[in-house]
Image (cartoon, rainbow, N blue to C red):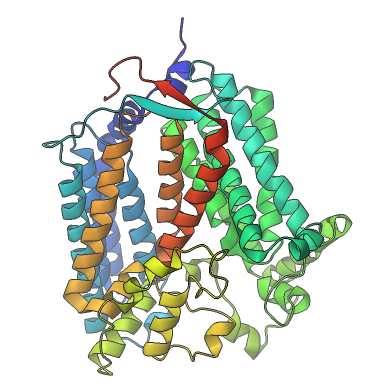
Length: 507
């Protein structure tokens, strides 16, 4: 006789989405009340730009409500994008980020309205693509890894552990310098594929392992091993002093656990946010000491790793306890963890450049370069960087010089990029509609496939990348997803198994 854990592992994505929808729809009125209450609190406390926040809050509620009203929903990718939109555009208003001080209330209100337009266009495109009036034929087959048996939950648990262990082993070898000799032998294009492959394996391990742990199908001993591997991988990624590199790990684990347990991993998220906030306090001291002239960490020897993190901890602890004098330079370069969640300044910068400095629109130029960026560097060593679209935006609008972009890139985000190309109305409309069409098509396509299928894995990888897209432009997002999907296909298809659907699979 099958257990609830067995069914949770073997069900298809449509059935899983229906189970997830019930508690979310039940709490939707509470979400509406909280959003309205937050608007009221901001208003009575004289928080600047409350009108802009109100536009954003109303805008992100629309796609959440639309998904909850579907009779046969898909996995809530549109919900993830809505929450991301709230986080990266509303956070700077709530925290009164200093970057907004140079913009007028009219500028902020205009930006809030543009985000509202984006959300409306997002829902319109998503609903058009998800419409069941012209449903495609039901697939006859799906793929799984040969080592995963949908009727044996333990095989899914072991696959998650192995994939995460592979990713952690690669990251350890990379950070400690054990791969330096290999990089000298293997061409850069091939090594890039290898790196992408192991990063994809780690994300897959986070997704699969967290899902199995969330469903309760993973035994307690294996759960302990999974969380220890996750901590190790998290710290190895942090050791580069590029804290944004753990965003994929955190997102994949959170998404996997949420789908398995039907609730967010509150304890995990609380611990991660606390750890990142602590490390973020003194990351500039660590970078000043350990990064080379090119702005990269040369790595940490395995035996030095405990002392390395202990030193980092002491730096942060001294800041907390005021045992360090903060210089003018520190105040200029210091950054709170919430400062990274600030796409509003990017949108406002584009708005100011076009409306107040009368700079011309790019007219889609940053999108036209994407096809040539999909050519593998193995066949075109001189291929432009995937950040080419970001470089065009920064140079055209005067945010960076061309020389400055060779060292680092100032982030934009998909909505700000669309504004820079098409303006205040067409930018949000085009960006929202295209994202909505893509998300709706993906949600609809994945419904019949089992959660253990490779099709589901590809969907979840794309979902994680959508969640991380807030600092990306289209050229970076498309090329990163394309490279990861190709790497996974090349590596996994030889060990994949074709299976037939036994019963009608649409929920």
